[in-house]
Length: 123
Image 1 (cartoon, rainbow, N blue to C red):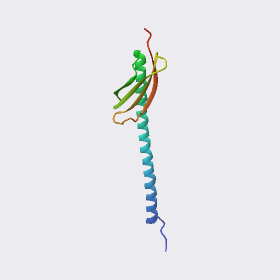
Image 2: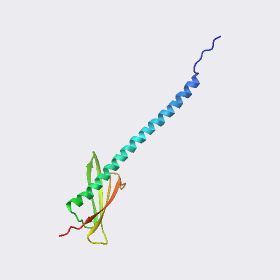
Image 3: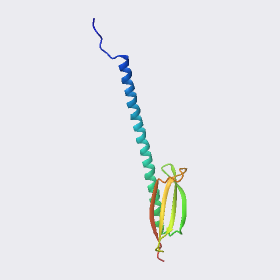
Image 4: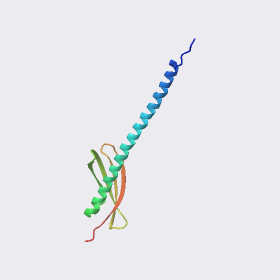
């Protein structure tokens, strides 16, 4: 009698189970990579917003009073909140500006923090 070669039902089920685990792990890795790319994009935009705030003060020659300032800006279809804390320095001609940027509705979780200085214009 001739014996037929092939896979048993148990071998096929084990192979399918292994394939399912591998595919699930692959989809999870792709999902995590996509999420990381989105986070990186948001952080990059937040960095640009913080740099824009400092550049605007520099370009317009602002010399703000010490205190807290905040506002919102829309970039790339997302709404971001910027907060600036202006602090005096030992030299009265300079002010320190700490800028933090977060997504609106994301609480105090800052995506970007940047520090710059203002110089009092000579009159």
